[in-house]
Image 1 (cartoon, rainbow, N blue to C red):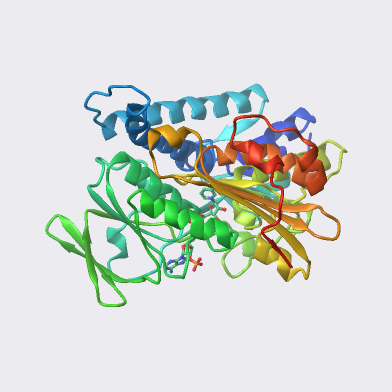
Image 2: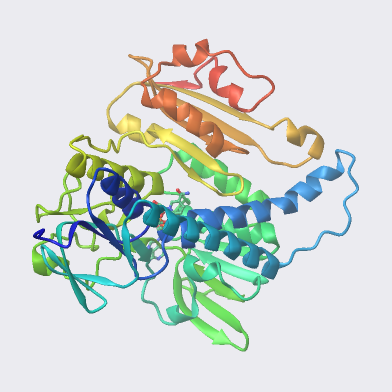
Length: 452
Ligand code: NDP
């Protein structure tokens, strides 16, 4: 008779938890996953995937306009929000079904209930006690809103995916990934968008050239980006909302969406009671092996607040399962991870920003290109592309690559291979250009723009 019901009990059926469960089961472990909502987690159900589908929808607006100078006669284009949401939901249902099949195909038990840790080897799942040798917490994060008067009148990205209709005028609060992405989506779909950011420039933490360039491009597309703007209160006025800024100015709109960060969803899970340590924001403290303060309890993904990206959670889950159940120990390397912001136009980055490289005390060669993409020479659209390489002068290693413009996320994925390998500027230059592309600029940047 085995000592425990399971070798591994995973709490949270998002991308990271499901990957860990499947890999551990493949290594021969008896595994269960508890999920209180829908399998797939933030990325599949209420994040990356539906967001990107909405972003595609928003791009058609410009595609119809751009087609005209290419000789196309485009009839009266109109957009139906309900069709988009229904089709998006159908795709999310399909993916949710695939996740279920992946688990059952791997012989992992799915328990569709909330799980609470009772002791290091016991979990309460919807009132039933289950025991496990190991526990993996992969519960993700949840939108966070500041507690100002009227905040309950606002929505978050969770609700934005299910609005009954497209708002005519929307205010988006925040200057991070989600705010910038939804500003592009709502603007492209035809809403009047105002984005309020409390600081000096959106996308804090990104390269300064990227931030300024993107803010200017977003503004050209019609989003009113207001910096140094903080909301004091929100009130209902008839069918509309009045937003009073700290400056006293009042903005009227149909909807207000907060994208002011996310907090780890670790509340009420019995974590501190069993000895798992949490940071002030609720993030689970883990070591490089994703182990918590309790040796048989590990945690991965957004609930650990390391690098909050789906592919990172997946890799952390894979490393955990291989190490603990497959006798193949390895660690996730959190350095030089590429990421993208699906803004309009999108951003792709890998490696260090110029400011972060300078903070390391390095002398740098900075290469930049700022140009009109070939497509827009005929379309007439006033949209530009920015590319930037941050190069260590002494070693000539490319420390960072940054791009704002069409296809930036696709391009940066390939550039990330070279940057991760530690390629030098000369090795970039040795790659012959693919012409005519935007990507070729990354291998034809001849002269540094600044050198210090
Ligand atoms: P971010 O942490 O990226 O940005 C939060 C924004 O809200 C910042 O601009 C911040 O300002 C601002 N803010 C925070 N608190 C307040 C407040 N009280 N009042 C006003 N503004 C405030 O969070 P997001 O919600 O955009 O995204 C969460 C995470 O999800 C990201 O960090 C990212 O890792 C992940 N994500 C990744 C995506 C991708 O890879 N494409 C897409 C979406 C999300 P300040 O800069 O001053 O702190």
